[in-house]
Image (tube, rainbow, N blue to C red):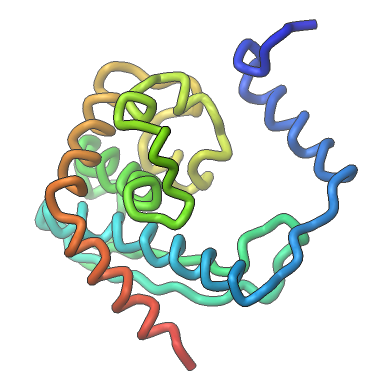
Length: 185
């Protein structure tokens, strides 16, 4: 047995998390939880779009409440789709990597979970990217990487996207706000 969760294989860690869920009560869905999830979904999709637009790729995003969720799932989800070029495979590897990372980095930079003790250096630590649950399966697929199998190219992309959002937080918030407004009934 290991004495640190960091030494456990990421897949085994995910299995441990899944098994631990059965012993913990699900989060009560309050207006605050709904607002938190809606904001993070909007920031995530806004991040994808801003990075795509920066790279000259047309896309659109939307967020919506998730009524068919499990006890541990998010109450809001989102989706970004490319308009031109239509297919993901028509977008270069570097562009796909940056766009995929932008969603999670946007939430880190602007989300309500922001932890001032979790610094830029923490985000640039390869160990941070060992967790499969850090990004959605679709985002990991778009990066072309497997969780925990990152390299210098991946980490340089993390740094570039982080720095872009660091320079232009007002745009991130403006696009996220627009997604929230458009999601209203």
